[in-house]
Image (tube, rainbow, N blue to C red; front, side):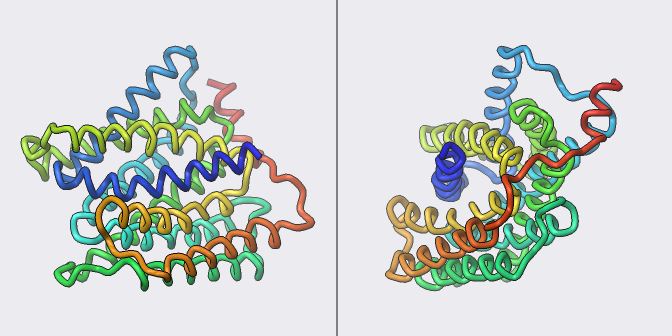
Length: 309
């Protein structure tokens, strides 16, 4: 039950982040917006690591995967999201990100023991994605002035996030989620600030209530809480199951976009949401029947490197 509640909280929080990003972008340039978001989140996690007197990971191999995952998740994925959301609706951005479970499922099939693709899993993924497409067709419309490349570029974000998720599940699940996120977020934040310094003017960041409110929500809930929760769940659940959060967030984002940003909402949202839930049920229930409780994959390099250093 705890895992279900935590997963539900991720769906709600990450659904709201698409709207919060859109709000924040009205007051800040994209790279600085993402960088300051992760600076605040990193500071909160660093304070928690210090308070708990936790030790940092040790070993060159572990840090290789930490750096690779941090760059893929906190720079590769979020730099694209913040940049592209200047050109498309928050709901459309979330819908394009819904390709994330497909990338994760393919990667897990080859890299994660016990997470091979089956016909039922594929069917569930397809049903869920069809639901997302219906939500898109009924409620999210790309602006007429959108650059043709913006939706295509957006697909880099779910691919990059999938790479990061596979890295964490395969190589880093033995690391503490708070420490791991703090380390990876710090790496992504540094690169984002470097990119912002080259491409943007920091004076374009408007330090008003709207910008600060959006940044604090994104930092504390959308980053610090959400990613620690996700990495905690990765130690307990298959990564393919957890990736299905990307099917629910477009529905949440569409409803919140309608309530907050006056974006369109139609009956198709209800039909699409129903199909999303059916797809998730197929993947999480039907496809898992007869299997035991998933365990954390044994990764010798993780414990060996840490104890040897």
